[in-house]
Length: 202
Ligand code: ATP
Image 1 (tube, rainbow, N blue to C red):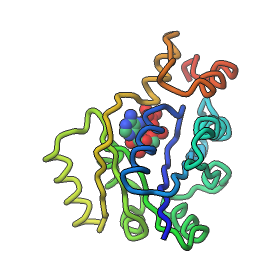
Image 2 (cartoon, protein in one colour):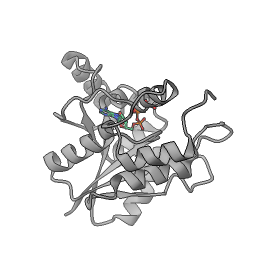
Image 3 (cartoon, rainbow, N blue to C red):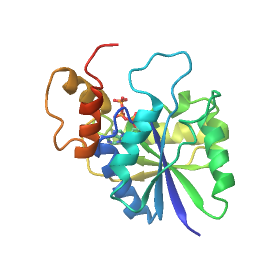
C-alpha cells in the first residue's frame, strides 16, 4: 500500500522550513508522496495575499521535487469547511493509499482547539515535525497523552532538524527591507518581489 503525506498550511509564504520537514518526513516514514494543501481564504477576512497566489507560490516551490504534489481542494472551495472534510474528500480520491497528516510541533499544541478534532483523529494519523520553541519532551508527551485520551488522536513524532523560520518572520523581514535569500526558493522570492507582497501593513 502506498503512503502519502498530507501537508496543510496557509503558506503565507511557503519557506524552506516547510520543504525541509516534508522531505525529511517523506524519507523517515517511507512516504511515496507529500501533497501540499494551501488553506482557502477565511470568509469575510481581508488578507493581503490571495489563496490563488499562495497556491501559485507553493506550486513554484515544489516543482523541482517529483515526490511533492499540490492540491487546490481548499483554495477553490467557496464554502467554509473543516480539515476533517478535506481529509474525507482526499480519502475518497486516494482509496488505495494510506494517508498521514503532517504538522509542526506548534500545531500539535493547537490540535485540541481544532474543530471536530475527534472526528479528524478517527480518520487519520498525525506525523509531527520538531520546531524550535516547542522542545520540552515532558510537555510534548503530556500533550500527546491528553490528545490520545480525549480524542483518540494518534501521533508519530519524527526527529526532524530544527529550523527556526516562520512565515511571520519572513513577512516581517520583507517589511523591514531585509534579505530572504536562502530562506525561501529563489523563484518564490521573485514572485513575491514582482507582486510586491507583504510590504504594507494591512
Ligand atoms: P505563520 O508564521 O504565518 O504562522 P508558519 O511558518 O507557521 O506560518 P504555516 O503555513 O502556518 O507556516 O505552517 C504549516 C505547517 O508547517 C504547520 O503545521 C507548522 O507547524 C509547520 N511549520 C512551519 N514552519 C515550520 C518550521 N520551521 N519547523 C517545523 N514546522 C514548521
